[in-house]
Image (cartoon, rainbow, N blue to C red; front, side, top):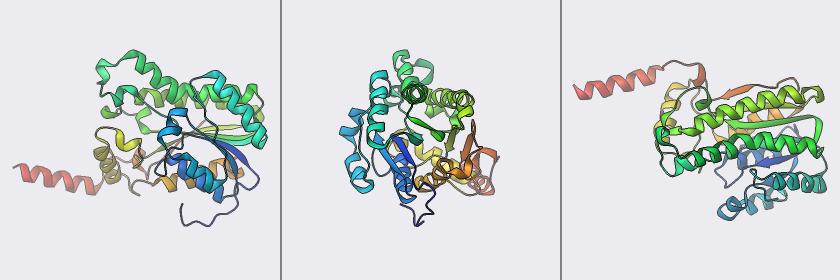
Length: 278
């Protein structure tokens, strides 16, 4: 958890946090930050992820119940919403921190994707946001004025070859956020995505070439790559009442990478490489 002692920004608020796996995951850090700011919430992940991860530890620290949910299964998502209301009542925020590509895991190149796996990537990483919001509405789980945040990546706008079909999944995720945001706006409900810089999580470091992506972004971004805890602090502001009119946005939390061309540090590094080659 960051050294910030908290401002009580989420006091009295209740939420659902999808996707925490272990203490390195961004969703885990967001859960700690939400607890610090006074929120109550439920934690959820797929049954297989619960077996592989250490979510019970986070549950003990935060006092949050754990409810298993496969976000590709309508019945599971509906049940999650009903159980959440039993535990907490209606909620004020939702974090979508879900992403997985079987093609990347199996090292399939983008030009030779397994299409069944591709559909799984889209279903798990993007369509799940649509399903979550659909059932949240259908079960009347969201309070008016609630805030929904999904974690994205700049691969939605730019090509990062090693990110493969996840580039497409994040583009779809951001589109769903905009479309649902427009439809939930009459109730004052906000839907945004955060485009986080490469972050040293268990999921991120599992991508081939991640170290290169991380170093490149860190060299280009004027402020450097933000940490998972810094992302958590940013999420807290979006869950809070301080951002009531921010919606349908893809918000870059990347130290300035998205609007930078090249940095002096990168120029110097490239010059050294070329000098060594001559």
